Length: 138
Image (tube, rainbow, N blue to C red; front, top):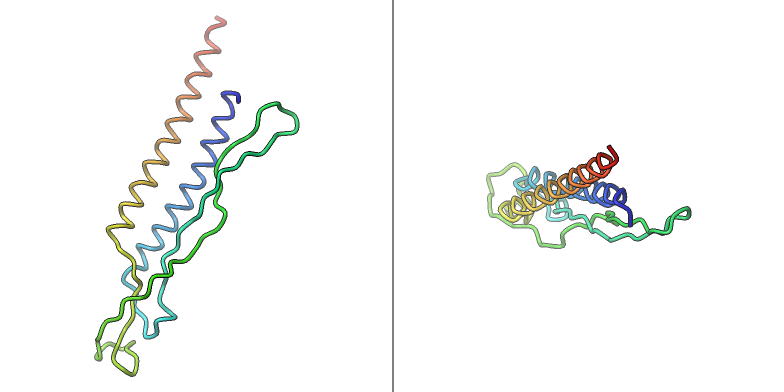
């Protein structure tokens, strides 16, 4: 694996973490949205990652990385709250909201942000090493 492959691996990880941050922000934005029916409630979404290892035809080294295979919805039951005066309440007086834990989502956001920063740092380190190698010939 060449030093240049670090850019491919880190780049694919940056893309995956970007998708993760987008789904987390969507979850947080819809955490307090209510509905009159449980089947209409927003359900949290989570990306599923997979490692990739594709052989490159013109090279002896494989290209590796990570990709988002799909985005799944949470199967958690929506929260049910008795609020007969709410305009969205059903015939029994209940409203429904998503079962999103904002503290857990915030912790996931911090984790994704740190992973993103780590991959940026890996790319910067690889760039620095390449520059140092080029300066050896001077």
